Image 1 (spheres, protein in one colour):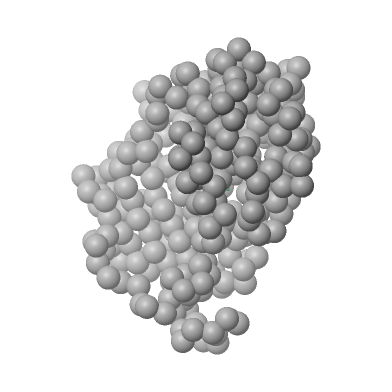
Image 2 (cartoon, rainbow, N blue to C red):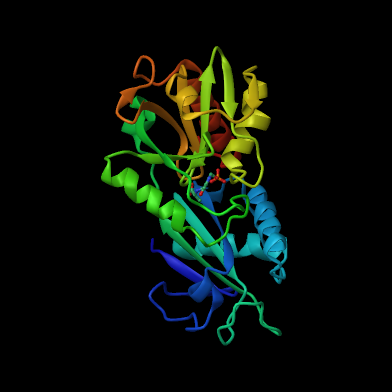
Amino acid sequence: MRSLGLVDGKIVDLAENVVPMEDRGHQFGDGIYEVTRVYNKQCFALKMHMDRMYRSLRELRIPAVYTYDELISFHELLIQESGIVDGAVYLQITRGAAPRTHAFPEQIVPRLTMSIRPGGARKTELWENGAQIIVIPDERWLRCDIKSLNLLGNILGKQKAKEAGAFEAVLVRDGQVTEGTSSNVLAVKAGVVWTHPTNNLILKGITRTIVVEQLAPKLDIPVIEKPFSAEFLKDADEVFLLGTSTEVMPIVSIDGKSVKSGKPGEITQKIQQAYQELIDEECHRA
Ligand code: PDD
């Protein structure tokens, strides 16, 4: 079992120097990415990730040069060649390499790079007992719906969380909670799940889509997609985060104060269980 890379369809060693100096991903962050989980040698929700990836490309006007079937086969190739059973595949497409100039260069070919790494094993202790978050200002640009390589606001926020000993930083713009630096945020009040609507201010998370459109209706849990304040979040009955790496993470403390009982809530636990069942079903786990 070993981590591996793939460049434009060809397997490479991760340590190999394969990207030119003037790749626009390197110089401008001019590209998009996706992260897909591998459970039991199978990609989870891969079609949804690829659909979102094509949307990100369209929004940035980067031509799509790989078909859906090719991308699926590259994921499968990485899993097969690496021998990795549980892990994550990272995919990025940049506009390509050209002499540095801000506007799109002409005759430029997008570059696909991918990697697979093992692990990303669930943090069982946090999944069972809940994690802490901090609330900080959202200093990102206004197209957070695009999964672009530009993540400065996100990484600065995550570093603040790390330094505060928290799992995640939740972002607030104009008095309203948008999302986490690498996750979506949901609050439960009086049995109703609240989450920011999908617009330019948040990423439409695949995990969020699965929970809002599939699992919550199945469990008869009502969801309202409406912005709310940090005060609302702190006063919620339950809070949880959703994301590919984060999965369904209960939040039990915000800025050092307990969320209600300080324990993962009932609705959060039901959603955790349903999410696990879906993974087991889709990835054929016993
Ligand atoms: N995070 N919001 C932001 C800003 C993110 O970066 C992510 C993903 C999410 C959740 O999206 P999804 O459910 O599609 O992963 C929301 C990284 C890629 C991760 O969790 O691995």
